[in-house]
Length: 231
Image 1 (tube, rainbow, N blue to C red):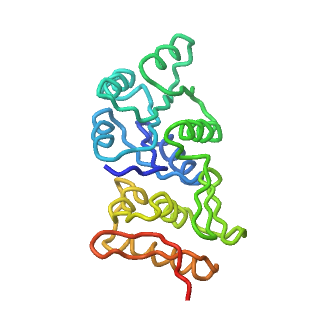
Image 2 (image 1 turned 135 degrees about the vertical axis):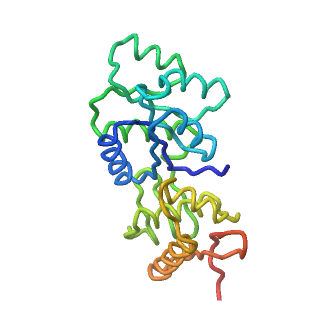
């Protein structure tokens, strides 16, 4: 499984809350999948390497703490933020001892959830809090801001995500499947040329901005970002 640096798994069975959280996470630059049961969460975690998990404890098929202990017993170190209405000190201590990396009590503020996720990701593999650069292109991975030649440029969230994948694998080929996993949720209907569409957009924007990097296609494999060769 390839690592998708900003993809979050939301394990929550309250669909109204799920809708609110998914919108908030997307606005903050995250890609997120949601599942409503522990069984579906286990399947998702075995299928995709998530940057972090947001876990409700009151799941319909299994207690969230039991699921969390199962995950840790398998040696899975994915950062997990527990999101629950259980607000006692003993509840928080139990959650942390079961393997949670952080604990947030409902009702919550979206800004706090995003801040806590970003803090988790800064601590895990430096996925956030760093600036990725190549040539005259730079990406602030936390602020989700792209500059070309020192000037901020307007990239959409998905264009920024495509650029991040390419910058993180600078000098190496990024498989097409990696883009599909990172850009689209498990429930999204993905067209056969969806990745190509975003690659085309990114190429056009980089050229229009005077970027000194180019996206190269490695046929049958994927894409690679490299500095443009001089005349």
